[in-house]
Image (cartoon, rainbow over all chains, first blue to last red; front, side, top):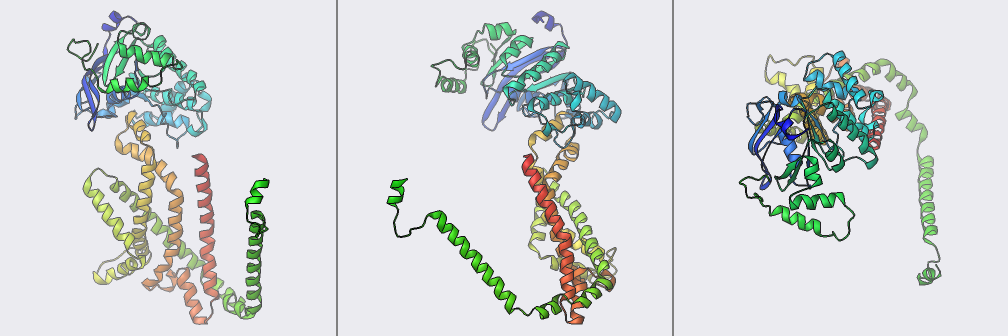
Length: 284
Length: 274
């Protein structure tokens, strides 16, 4: 999907000058941007760059310390906002899966529908089964999360979120806690979702996934958006030195002569340059 | 190898393994000696007459033992249920974001953990005298449930609080992300997991309550309300014989030992799951 196509699309999430501090530590230093309907955005960047915090600010799992977040036109940063209602429309997938261990796979996928959406048990189960089938785990509905592999648990977590019929899916490093051989199944489920037109905001370290699936890639570092654009542009032909350094390290992890470079990069991040390109904002 | 043996002082002449073997042997010999002495010195016919007199066994079983056993169980379960409900409320208060709730709960817990249960029982026994016209329902059962339950709830509150805090934060985040309000997330997601974690320690609390139910004697119970200890003690007093008390003791073990075994099983299973 090209940028001009996207510009005509409806805005699902609008973020304006978002800031977040933990004590004295400012993690987000003014983030602005939009998510359009049907768009797949991948956020990449070194650890500590604020990408997970940004994602968690969208559904208010973290309370922003400045700026505004609008979801479907509703300002979630407004203290009077009914955040539970907004959250029901935003699916969230966690790094650590966070399935409910005392419930079966099926119950994990029905409890939100029944409690929040007030669906009947049979309706909820039908919807849950449909989504378990989508993630390829129809045969596991009676199992408990503890009996599943990490990859299966994460696919159940995706089915749980999908069962709420969300307008938007948030993925917080969904494959980072998985053994390498289990990553593929989760990513292919996400690929399928993207091809079906789901709006997705994905924090990830999977560069191949970002390159193939994303409509737009955002590179974050030091609490700023350093670079964003089409994947070919950001990953294939990065313009900023920090993006180049990061991608070089991620794509060639075994390259020799790099010991210590990480420490330098870390130091550079923490004496960040707010407006590297001098155009009056933090964005490139 | 040869250097090691050469360095060691030659005078012991015994390998460590052999020395350990010798020590174990000595311990067995001492144990056997003590058992033999007891066997020969003890006055077995007298012991049997005092602790296990057949006609007393029969009399104890026939007169009111089933009723006393039933009462012990009723006192215990009532106090446990009341304590569990009260303890859960206290635990949630302890974790409340409203500071006065936290203070109240802390004061309550410290107060009732510091008092002997028997003092609370005596106090509740005297309440109807102190406040004329006041009636505790189901007396004396209600009095025991209330007094022992209040004390037990202080302990249970701390256990349940720990259980709630042991549920990973991601569970609440996942529940809230689905759009559940905080209260619903606590009821549907956190508490069921917390109670699973605290079932073994709460069962231990139940065992303690089985034994504490014997304190009910302080209320001056009527015959129909006797629990095991009071029943066994009265019978032992009238007959100047310990047999009824021994039987009462066996009845306690009949309740507590299976509970202990269940607790140990649950703990082993939880350890495996982790």
